[in-house]
Image (cartoon, rainbow, N blue to C red):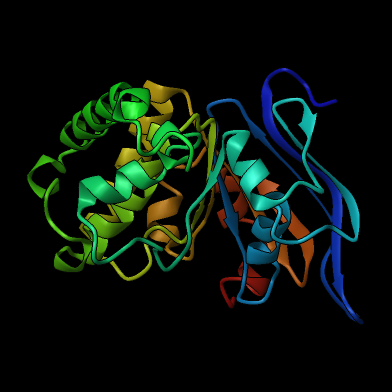
Length: 255
């Protein structure tokens, strides 16, 4: 079992695809309320690691522990219900729905979704009203109140990424895995996104593991960094330690 101050621990995880070792004995930890970066060249195994943690892939070897419970072997839906929320580099929202509707899709165990109860309004109306109130307050709190009734197709890429991240807050989220949240957005907007991440950590007590290539942004916000290269852990440490590590400079920064 992992320590009580650790939200996520990956222990010696390997993932093989035939003869390709996409991950080969990777171990990382994310502490409670930690913001941890995961960097490395393209093809280093970062997204594969996310897929193993969140149940899309079964590890060939190793273990994944979340809040004191072993979760490798669970399917993605079961991992989500444990409070481990993942976002994708390309946001997966419903473009024809409004911002509010997209947020309201997320909460699990909605009574009105059950075939038996859906025709009986009295069974689910109180829960629905509570979720709507929570979603509206959440969007206002993070500066998205003006977009509540806008369709996703009408929004900027930055706003879409913010909404995808906030959707997890209406669930029982304890931790987020963010896949390149700053990709494709302007520098100042990227910093706004990471400022929101810090607010979520500070105000909600959430933990984060973040894949990001925008090092000029990432390193100003994370507490600790892991570096993958060819499926193995190349280095780890504080942002300063990692940026000054000769192995990282050679393998990742091209020095």
